[in-house]
Length: 368
Ligand code: IPM
Ligand code: MG
Image (cartoon, rainbow, N blue to C red):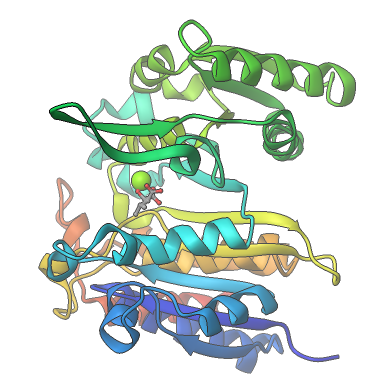
């Protein structure tokens, strides 16, 4: 059988540096675990604009549709701030999400024991935290029509549209319920049914799917603003949170910061199964391109490495190997290795991006 295929789109800023460490880990799996991948690489974001005048070429888009998994680093940077909206680096990422129809965005917020002191919240509020935000990723106000800026009389009007169909809500709700069954069997759905019709529909459909297909899962509903408040008050009350594209964008940043370390958090964006049974999938760290530290060996590669662990889990069904990689990350943190973003209350041993990757590989070796 052919090796599973991976397309690497390292992107801009620290993207290429953190992806460099993932490449070492991919090589390790081939050498030491007989898990070989056919890896190809291409451009996305500002670097694609520099090379081709577009943040994502049709050829790259076509490749992304064919591979078993896409690994993305990060896109954007100040150099591209003045570009026309239609060719901004982010448009490349949004096109990938939309055209691959990656409707379920999984954003775990997990607090590593070694880093429980890093949160801005009290240690007992975050220690042991392990929640999963499932964000709808291909619809809602990000893509709804009409949209645009037009003139009405003497002034400009900006319009975006929040639009959800029943089937769009139903499929992401199913993703959340399926995940909950493998975790602590609890889903909280967040919307603004008190002010938005799309929120009323969201609440109804999630409840219907629950009652018809997942009555064994504990379901609650919360207004998204109250959800934000509860996430900071006592986040451990949640297991899986399912929410729309925009609320999910906000709430996942909030949840990420609870853990005290944005440089640690991975994500998976999943779509429908392909002919080979694997879901359409793109994996990326939650953090951005961090142009201020790019090229200095300061970036934390862990979010990108854990994104590859999610690929092992969700695309390649290598659950034991995903666990192995996650344990290796826990081990180096417990040993006190700290990239610049993690230099906090406990001191620790400062390491560079590549030192961190090498240490994780040494921990993988030790796990054999
Ligand atoms: C994210 C980011 C993106 C989003 C941007 C870069 C388009 O904030 O992945 O959360 O808004 O979805
Ligand atoms: Mg965001």
